Image (cartoon, rainbow, N blue to C red; front, top):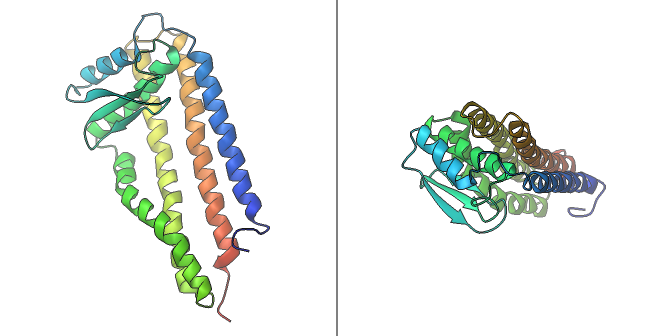
Length: 229
């Protein structure tokens, strides 16, 4: 029953939502990856321009393999741009790069949700490792509700992480769009196109949060109401 039961449809819903969101962001990125920006900037040039104007000259820009693997590493002050992004002059690539610079600016300004998300990483990793073994032990020991509930709580840390991630990502996108507009890096026609790319990317985080919630709900439905015999 632990793996195959009537609540398994909750997991299926989460997988479907995540798949739809992933397909949407890929198709949206692909669409605007064929639209070059009018000023002729590459995504790397835009990143350096925004970083320097924000007083973040110390933040380095490095290459990272893959497509859409772009990220900002706050522990090393390094902005990493993917193969699909760094040398591209497309509106899509510039939007993605500016979004990652938005995270660097969040770090600079000590944006609380970003600090909270970083603090949650160790707890999230630990919770994901220990939650299912603890629930399994609770089941083995005659549905020990204390162990089971602790397992569900540990698993729920991943949901908390996903929820905290939402304002972090939306705020980074809003910062990116404002900078691209106000510094005239993109034209008035190109800014809405970049926004569409970032909005599509944001849906993947929304889908991930919903999927995490459904997983927690499934565990509660399966084990949360159990009592020792």
